[in-house]
Image (cartoon, rainbow, N blue to C red; front, side, top):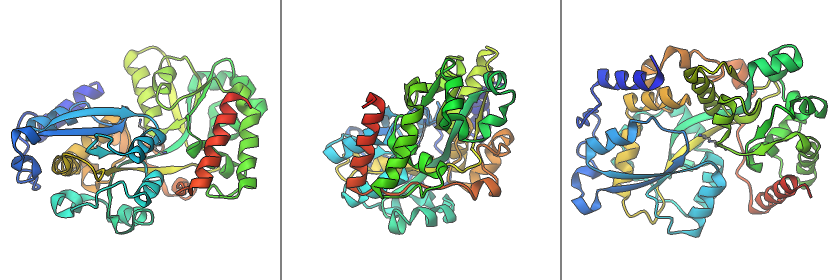
Length: 379
Ligand code: SPD
């Protein structure tokens, strides 16, 4: 059964298709029910490839709220809109390290938790971890999480290096003698310094959270050495590029690479894709649901957050996009192939090597941006 059919079948079995809305979790008496027809809209800004295809239509059927859904593929894009103000969005999904800075800039509405009864479904340990950057979990709710690592074309890597062992280390992309071998089949890296600089620092044995310009300079030097072998800087097109065999390696996000693997398998095009969390360690990040303080439809945003936290909805999203969610009760509803995949749910020994991103002070954020521009333009 293909993934779309699996999701439909699972949702039908759970009785959440059609206009039922019956999660039994307090959704029905929520904001949606109280709004007049004119207020039945919701403007959402989420990452691309980051929601099951039925989630929005099912929410619309269940609540009568019409959703306008826009996508982005970098935290920098969301941040620019939020800091400029009047974004027009009622719900945004920044990652935790950016959210920390945006909270300080005062762009979010403090959550009225009485409007999100399903907050009780969220993993308390995750909330505790997140509270380091959002004290008291005052402004945001975790949506999905993942890691950043190496996605690769299995047959190409075997052909070039003799086995896929090479993909278990960042050496494969950061040693020029390796990267040069990948130049022709194509390397893409995420188009953001917020990922690549900490990854390079960690690889060099430095603190990935360092704010020391001299230390950050070491990451810049490393990236500069392999720059000639990087074909593309992009944070979403690599899903199809990997799946079609147009590139052979990406420094990308876990679930996106697994989606590329599944797209290739569904297309039956003979391309085999795998994802590796390199042994030197890799980033772990959390993407967060937050309401801009100038949101026009905040009550509908609460209703949507609450809907996403239903176990069956969270499971459907995880099954579709292959990123873990924050709702432990969803786990029995997630495909065993996903929960049992150590590249999606890292086992404790891998987890121990993961690091999170720091909230960058403005001057370091500017240094990151400058470093990135110089790298990309070759200056
Ligand atoms: N296609 C969805 C990707 C979500 C990635 N979020 C990562 C944020 C960490 N910087």
